[in-house]
Length: 171
Image (cartoon, rainbow, N blue to C red; front, side):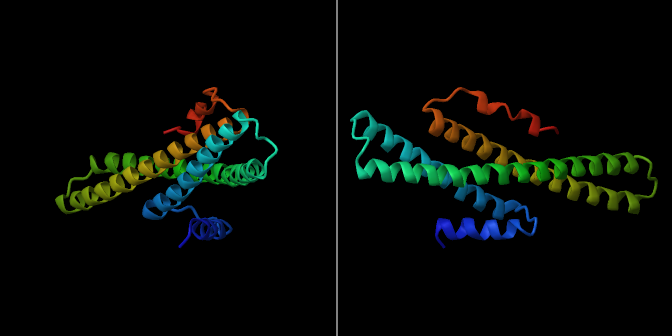
């Protein structure tokens, strides 16, 4: 399946409010990172063409069109990944609250059989929490990369302001 096909499939699922998790999320992020790499390559090639004052050639025009297409695609994915991040932050918080409740309740339990069930529930919730944190952090890293490459593609330089997304990581 081509990169475009994979991205189109993800966009289709978006209309259902779907947020991928685990391996599906990693695959989506890999596709988005390929777009980031493509835009970095176009920016690099375009800078060489513009340095040589060949601004009006058809190759330079093709590069500019490709740059604009990739910028638009990454702008879409920037918004989409912010939506993922909001969902994943809520999921991390949900898991964290559940874990705290399980631990608090487990301390009050006297029966060994019930305590064992709580231990299993705690382990399961810890796993869900860890996976949600991993997914959230992976999305956050890709978001930072998208912001940087879009900033560079627009201004030709990196100001560092793109890293001001810490507010998304509330837990």
